[in-house]
Image (tube, rainbow, N blue to C red; front, side):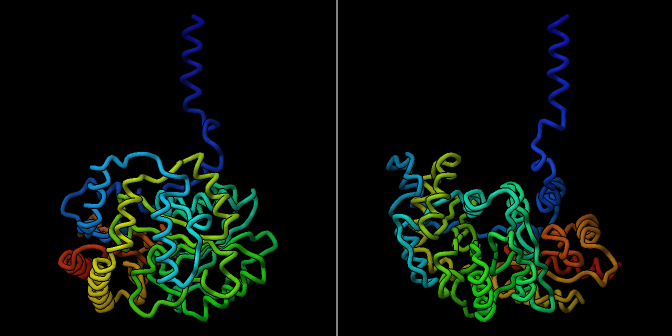
Length: 400
């Protein structure tokens, strides 16, 4: 009898809402992942949804992985990462972004940029600290801030500004509780970028208000015009900026899960403390592949960028021709057309397009409330697939 009652009590406790931390229970599920759970169960779907290159990782990078495995390089590395990779990263950042970092204490290798963002937020924030960021934005920003007991403060960007961050709007969002500013340009989901003037104005606000700036530059190689310097390269910014970058997008290495952060020694040390107790280190095989990518991957990266530019031009032209206004993206591999005039919400538009024409796009609201009235289309898929998707979308609009 006692055993039965104990077993019953234990069973009931498993379903108790008190088992889940309140700040985790309150988090929404990813709008992207929920949507593509539906897509995975359907046939004949043309997907313009997932932000993953359709290119296979270049052979010489895969070969470096195989060679590292063949040599038995399957051990742990330093918590900071392989020194050879940190040296290659710092050389690359100096040459392409104009910022000099020490591989010994100003660089850490992480499990993708997602981990880099998580550990800097955990290393930086006290409960109640505010982080100002811009929307529409990558889906993890606000949840990542909340998971570290910070307070996310969103600044909306507008189509009329090309979805670039307005420094005046940013200034209005800063309060005495603001600890950091999180920016991502070129941007997911809009493809927007920042001008040199805007970056200088944002840097001025960071210095004036003593803010740490976290700049996520994962799409920086996929820029279709002149690339302005990183925020970290501007006067007075290196000592207050954490530069996040990785290999997933430019080198088609998403499954390798390899990223890095460069920044002031005190912040890198704090990040390393979190990293060493959670991830310990990134995969050594992935790290050795990343060294090869930095040493010899530029030609393939530039070929992929050329292909993305061609796809961008096609999808922007087709969308505008069918009456879905679309700001030409300056970077990344996304377009963010406006669908408000159809009379459908973003979610309704995406669901009906999927059900009626088997084309998958992402509702703009997955990237923040100000994404209502828009959808995100990724052109990280083959050009012939994009053409098929555009034909189906045109037919869908004609039937509304």
